[in-house]
Length: 304
Image 1 (cartoon, rainbow, N blue to C red):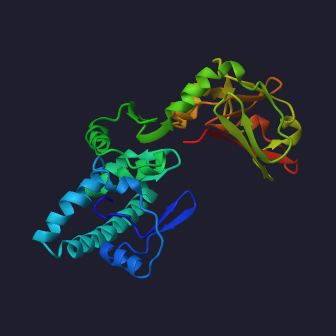
Image 2 (image 1 turned 45 degrees about the vertical axis):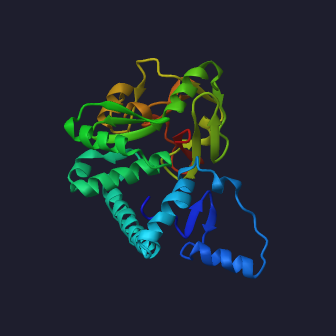
Image 3 (image 1 turned 180 degrees about the vertical axis):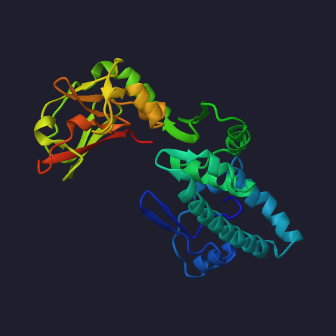
């Protein structure tokens, strides 16, 4: 990305940034401005040698051009090739991640089966998608060394995020979410009324309940009008399907390989009846009858 230099078109926060004169010699632009007497604004920082870009432009670049007159054309061509190479690397990462990653994380066995260069490329792309920024080379090198070395649960800090390996997957979560849940525990919502499809933010829980209209596999509206929110206390029983017995949440989580950070969030009760468990879904005993007005529930953690 660094060798590819500044792109002619970039998308940031929904805005397109266009730089149509990137391949035009700055001296030609300056001459055009003088010839047509066009008013312009000069950035005062452009002459400040404290900035590396200015030291390069004011001190290094003139000497480079004096010794190698074609340097600008050569570097521009190199940047063009680097842009193409980066586009190819991004496209390959998209292909690989379609096969080895899902909403629950990066699947490490198929990731490790990739050739080394593709493994590194896919990891960098996945980390950037999770955190919104390119990961430091040192962090990527450490993960490339340590992830294949063991399959045991482990954690790695990554800025304001934390990476967690659990049951063959690498997940990513924002550290601030856990801190927010801990500090806001005493201010958590205790009740919830779900009256229609929508997004219900839960104060102090670090997330929201998303309710969507369904014709089967949901909870009857009547049972959702007055819900009680509670933490896990131990001993709760969850039934994943009508033909299966109720089992403890711990065993259900283990059997479905739900990592610890996806188990956060409130248990939803209608009276004393368990309705919904984050990471597991709706208790089969709470499913609405055929033909009843009903909603499907999902737990959505805070922004990642």
